[in-house]
Length: 99
Image (cartoon, rainbow, N blue to C red; front, top):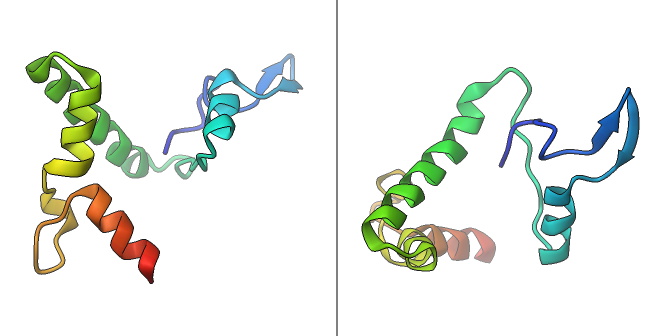
């Protein structure tokens, strides 16, 4: 999830669309759906900013980005993902995908 910043959406020059940003092209190459926060709704983008901040902190602690992302997504339970039990983002994703 991102805001509508020029680095995340279609590149425009003088009001003319010139193609997709490198970010958009990279997401497509990985098959990732790009979700944009609602315009003038900073709370939506706050979720993404919080996740990035937490991963950066873990990266500093562990000294390795891959380890930080793995810990965040697969090992560390998140208080916001409770459903009578703590879950990791990966577990929450699997449960949602099954429905």
